[in-house]
Length: 419
Image (cartoon, rainbow, N blue to C red; front, side, top):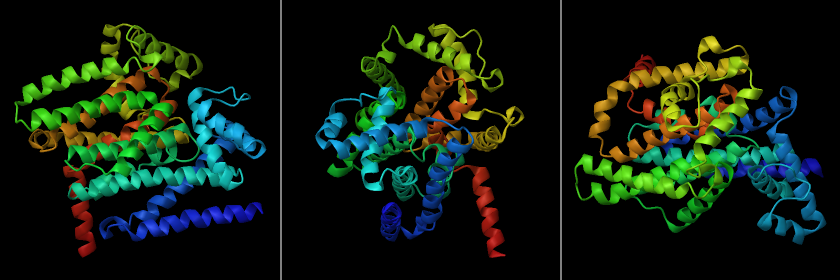
């Protein structure tokens, strides 16, 4: 019976994939199967690595809690639905955000016979779909963006790996991309329909519940940019006025958001950042840490250490810092990012002249703020490689799209094919 349920789930997953692929644009259809298979394999690979390499970890702890919730469903459905709506399982000792994810996994478990691997495939498939539909929207609206979008959201190794399987980052990443897709449409004057709006609102709630710090940066940046876009830009005001308006609105929204979570309270925020930093530093190998200059919970100390936090969050570990295979994979990816970043700097003039100036600036501001915040509060390079999937795909797209180095490489490949 168990294997029949597993086969049925696999048939449903691949049946949905076949049906979705048929409806895709021919221009990107060739990317579909490599991307979906890479995502599904990554979800299985993540479980195998946690089982045989780390021996323990979030994914199996989360699944065990989800399984206990599913068993409650079969014993007492009414109690299970109260649990979903009201609170945590009495036996669960984990954090609130972990409990939130376990509830989603428990629902999937009902249909997978509590099979970790099949449930993991469903989570990976949902994460893939969010990436795929964002890529589809981007490639439709921005000419010649296929390579940049695919590189950023479908095939970036660490992003694919850490956004797969049963992890908070996977579901949060899917929610982030759904919200980002709706935001993109609004910024290019294409308002999403009611179903997409409802899905985006639901996804925003999921994002806040799982990764509130991703949401706390993205939502104020997006809301401020939308207001500026639909008021100051349309009124054809000067860029100085638009920028002043943006800063004022963003400051007000950030101040408002700060009251939605205790860690963001104005009189507490810097202490939380430094406190998290100290906790990570105390349990981490010094060789795997970002070392700051006397980091303290003061505005001056945070500002002085922010440039190194930004550099480390974007480009570290460097190749010479890689002392194991996992760090080496991340280091090679970071080298790739650094080369793309440096070769994209010549495109600064195109940015200033872009008709989507505030869209691009909002993405840049989101990347900078979230990168600095994560690198300061999470100085462990291994953990940071996992957490930064919340911004690194957006950076990859920005530095790949219209990049002269990428364009020259693609042109060379075309010439080789024609020869």
